[in-house]
Amino acid sequence: MRQAIRDAVNQSSRKPFHWGGLCGYQQLEAIAQILSTLPENVDEAGYLRQVLSQVNRVLERNRKQAQNLAETHHWLCRVANCLNDPPSATGQTSDQVAAGMDALIDSFHPDAKTQSPQAQLWSALKKRWQLHKQELLACYDVPGLPQDNLQIESLFEGLRRRQRRISGRKSTRELRKFGLAQVLFQSESEADLLEQIRHVSRADYLASAERLAQAEHPLRFLQQFHRNPAKTIAQLIKEYTELSTSNQPCQSRVLLSVHNE
Image 1 (tube, rainbow, N blue to C red):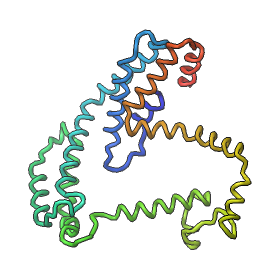
Image 2: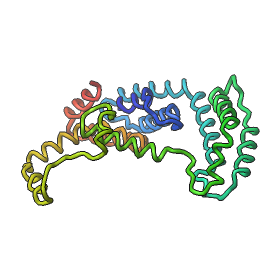
Image 3: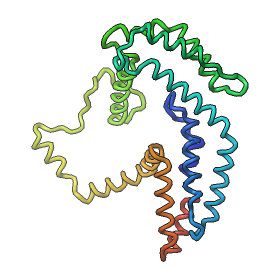
Image 4: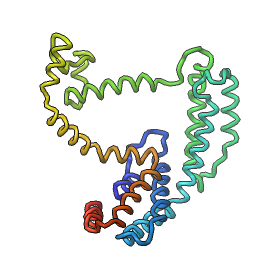
């Protein structure tokens, strides 16, 4: 539970335009919603009630900022819909898209004093639209021209990650001269390769797989938490409730102490 709260409050590695602050606030809302349904007869429920009060305090303190971010995100989605991603979805011309964007910008009038995120979005959007309007609209008149280069950047980033994982080096500059191919096994045939793999005993393989699963458990929990925070926390509370109400009070106290650590 503490790991989920720290992730929602302090994580800084959010993707651009994913509105990390808003996602973290929504994750805290899901945690508070599930904790409020905790039965009174559960062991150590008082501790979780204190956690709930702290979460509610953080939510109330940042409610106004979250509302501004949500409104800003709404306008950002309207901009994306106006640009028609992908361009071939509606078949609009560059003139039609330009007219829609100009109308959208003219209808956006945020207050800089009380709506700082909206005002920053409006200022950046208007400036970049005026500077790069023609370059952004070329994809609507040239068939097959993508709106950005994100796909090719993603491809090269995946190749670099594989090189780092195989070589153990942080930098991939030295590996460029060797190409993108890496040799994991040396064998003359598929049968020889299979024979090398079979030399690994089943017990060693299962032990290594178990260690790998234990090492990946915190990351897997966060991945599930990011996809569906309410469901993940509800499952965590359900498991804890079943453990606390069973005939295993010692184990429940040990579990809580481990979480506290």
